[in-house]
Length: 548
Image 1 (cartoon, rainbow, N blue to C red):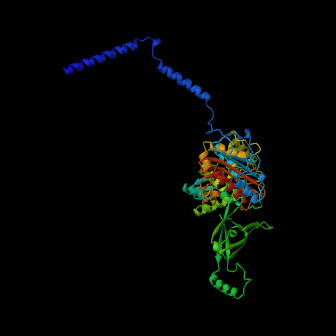
Image 2: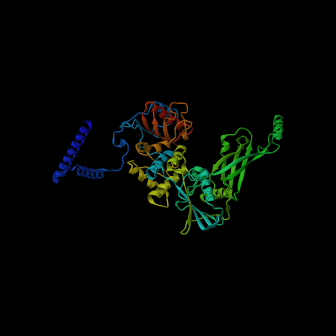
Image 3: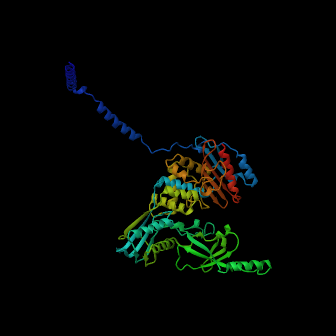
């Protein structure tokens, strides 16, 4: 009985399905379901409408244009006035711009539209422009080319090193490049090593023009193939006489008796000075005197100069207590410096080099043998901004010039590129003056409001994390490592400092005590910026901002 009922039920289901199918087939063409066609047409129309309305990706939130609003006169906080009064610094020497990023008006502005020297805070313009133009994953290449036949590891010709402006081709990175050549089987170079710096076209450069210190690394000449910031490491090594202990005992006894007071300070030893990488045929006058007593900061600042005949003279005192130390100075041309480093690394890796240094270019017919890629821009701007590296920033400016206007890069191309990139991002560039992008300049000028606008725009940019992470954390790292180390302000800001003679500046972001994210800019030009006075004014402003 149950079986028959199930059979009847199945037949009924079959008949119902058959009738419905016949009805569907019998519907006139005009009455058929057009749902699919409607969806398809709507989708296509939607795509057309969407494409027509699309525009360039916007910032997270358009920043407020303070220039088109009334500028209420705001008195300086009493804490800042007290510092200015204490050091007799005129208020007109200071420019300040402070704004809560979620507010429509500045929290504090003082002389915000006066063009002033920003010192190294100018690096913020260069690094932001680089992020926008190149992207944080951009990498510089350094190429190795062969001119001649390579057989069984022996190059019967020249090896060419061609640079493209890598700012961070330091010891370990250049060594890796050379080691890779050995790993690829190159053993012997029978010809010369040719340095190709043609990617940059640079005017004549006087490294002492800025401050009369031509051997300081921050004044070094940039180049397309720049090794280790163009810095030679001078190893200062105290060498004591064998009878030092006995002579010390005799000296102390004689001094107690009032004798031997005119004994020469360095009669008990000497200081060897060794340049690295090695400079073949390098002749200099070593006038460093070995002294007794504690190691002092002044011992790390020997005087480098050239006498009338052009010979390098190294003069100063150096305590035995300092032990062995490296002191960095720039003494070679970029081509000589890169060659000396290559030669030392190559011979250390048991490679054979029979030729010498030559300056030239890659030619048609040369074979590219290896390409080295640098750390990314996102990594390098952390070094630039946290430690205020001038030479790296100048390399970056030239890279931007070549990228936007084509090689060879020139300083003028770099300046135009940066200002154009800023203008494209709605930053007012009227009156901004750039020289080399690093702020190591007496020409560079920008207002506090323009610097604030840059920071506001960067904060709302997709690359904000990379940009902000490149700035110093007070009490934690970079140029601000020693500020606010035991205060609540420690680690609560991302800031860039700037210091020159008669100039101090600081710019960046703060997350204050109440959780507000502030943009802060202060520029101080004029006398009485040194001796820590500029820093005290900055600290007073930062403490005031932290409590708002």
